[in-house]
Length: 219
Image (cartoon, rainbow, N blue to C red):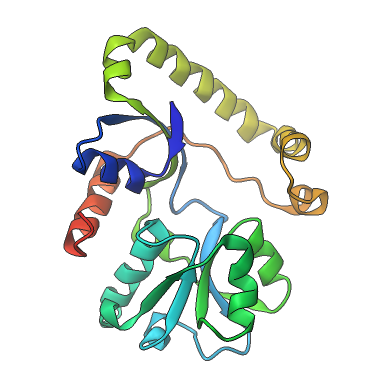
């Protein structure tokens, strides 16, 4: 199995790549958000209405953040095609916005906290507002493997759900793992809010996201 977004799994399935969602890890809309549309504090951008004719930077194109902003634009009466999306590596999002090359960025942690602490503000949580409940991070596996190994899949689910319960009750343990196994700064790890882990896959929310992808011509 491997970790994917719910959107990536939908993309795979519609392109005849047989994968199956096994369980979720983090669902869009959880608090606190681990990603958001942000802009410099002195920026004229205060909502998606202010992005008409402007560029938005993101870590990839046609992902859940991109889709969330498009949905916000449409809901606000803004032509989604009037906003240009630019793919920028996560570490370069902040400096690109400071140079004025983009009007706003969809930042993710740990970069978002750093930016918010040094001159940026949140415009909106586009994913949380429009794609709540869809898998932001989930476990997926080859459909053939799941079909041939139902017991392994069941035991994997049980083990992961047990781990989720422990992690949710002991955020200090999650921080200890991050300090040991990642290159994130210790100061960030010790100060950040640890998001809760949730195994549930909300089919209706997943279908809603797939419908939005279809409406914007992504699938």
